[in-house]
Length: 235
Length: 247
Image 1 (cartoon, rainbow over the protein chains, first blue to last red):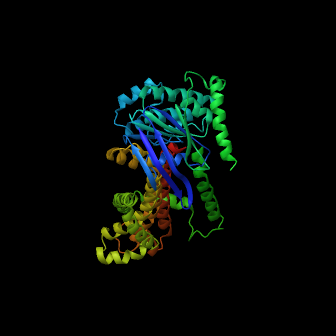
Image 2: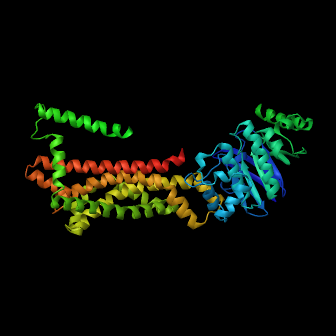
């Protein structure tokens, strides 16, 4: 689906990414986890070409890519339905039906600043998935939500992912979030400035965040990632 | 209640001025009572010559506005979307902006003659800079920020980009620029009518000065202040209306 080879990037003389390699296969929810400032968002911006690549190669199976921004970016002067309309090829009726399918139709004529953070992020997700893109890049979209909102939006994201059967590359520093949503996790190391380990996540998905935390296999994954973060932190 | 606070300072100042005139603290020959020149302004509106002067000035301001808006928008759009053009045009603006526009009025009289063309040219030129600077910064900010990234990621088509994103997104910056530009435009209207003009509010003030008709001068100045005040209130309302989306 997407293959990254030897991706390196510098800001002035500071090396952010050094020879990063990553392969994400089709229909995978792939999370890149790492400490703040290791270049997770930069990796997504390089994949989406929002940032100009300095070196390395990215092989795309298709360039139909979309992005879920961290701060739920919208055009503030357009209503929710108009925002979705201008960002897609769909008409007003289809968009209303789509919002209704996801129980968000009452917000269709509201402006982005009238919606709560969680609802806005749901619309942000719908906007990304409705494009029928082959690859969706998500840049820590849930970092500013509280635990209750997070739990709801994780379920919402999983439902959208199941419905649209696309490929997602998600970045976060939240271990629980990564384990709840992903099929696969890659660790982006601060020390080596590239991905040091990738492993599949074999956890049953039909559960709440609270239930998940009590599962033994969850704790095993959690401690594994926690130790990686801790060793990077001690640098 | 808010409206009372808006006009209260004017009422207090006017009352103090009037009391000062009554008790001879203020020389009424140079500073006539506001009651006098306010009443005079109402009387002047019964005079068709004064109404004609007002309409001529309004026409010049409107013509200057209608010329400067599309030109400043085209220039700002070109600068924000074509870095090469911006590198040439923006330094030119920076170089000529500090020049007082009134200073080139005699030159425009030479080139365009003493009719309306020279006056409208100076008014639209003065307004152009203030509109252009606001629009260019607004468009660059939009294009370089989140909005630009959304446009790129979602491959928004040209029609939607222009009508839904650019034209609607720039409204706050446009009205902020227009507020400044109309204030300056009003000044240029009056100054350009002071000399080589047979009509207009500026000409009326000049003639009143020549005839030492102080109350007429004050009445015309009051009219200009009221027009400026109304423009300020209307544009502030529009700015507030479109700015609410950002909070």
